[in-house]
Length: 382
Image (cartoon, rainbow, N blue to C red; front, side, top):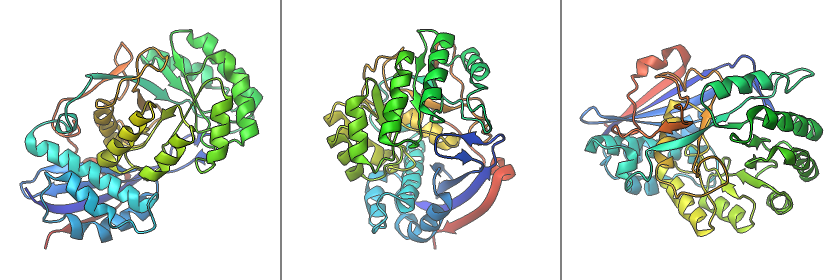
């Protein structure tokens, strides 16, 4: 079955209030959604969640000559062909475009056989994944964590049994808010934090020291990922696990951080590291270092459903939380492009189900994207 067309949908919205973390306030969220259509009308979806406009240019100019008219049931072969377009951009927007296309090719290849992506890639190891809430986020003004208690109560009511707030306003304040959150949530709820690359080594270690009583499952991205020496220093000094990897695109980048012992939990993003083909290579590398891997996901329903399929395939690890790894990250902010087809909240047991429906497990009509559409393009086979 051959590929007939490639379409790009640039979509976005402005969150209100802005979403704060230790590095910035997110006032605009933009995404590229790729839709691949085969000659029989079957479709597959992929996503770029960072740098979507640059990735859109690469996807539109460089990928059609490699993909159009090709057999969509061979995503592995096409992935290696697309890697040839990267040039020097092995960790940036070009790799993100390849990631989205690989994601869509797997969706399409699985649909062609009437099976899920997890089944296409060898079969799911589990039918559910523990979900963790990605939030709350830092607020603007003089009380960055003031709304956290009410927001955590809401997340507990929504069945979340693991919560990852953003911290990084100040090391002492980090400790105060997380100690209070532990008392509020109780001992049976997993707590982790995300610093979003916002601290220096000294500030990161001070923050972690103040948060120790909160019994954190992990501290995510305390430093810039390029600072391998700093990340190694924090990882070797901290008493809790350090997590990261969402910003890394190439297999070599993951090799470097694993070899340095930077992360005890690895979090590749399917949108960044090469889609399913790239993630599987990273997961095999993580297995070689005996480090648990799980998808980072903070975007639309496309990457979220892809992450569930990928999570179903990963090695089970005991990380000390309420259930074994891997976990599924769920964006709990108001995100219409995530909840377009329904809520992503967990079930009563704190887990999300792994769909066994064809492809990524959902059907999306492009018309549903209209309220958030910024730009659209299409390239067809000649």
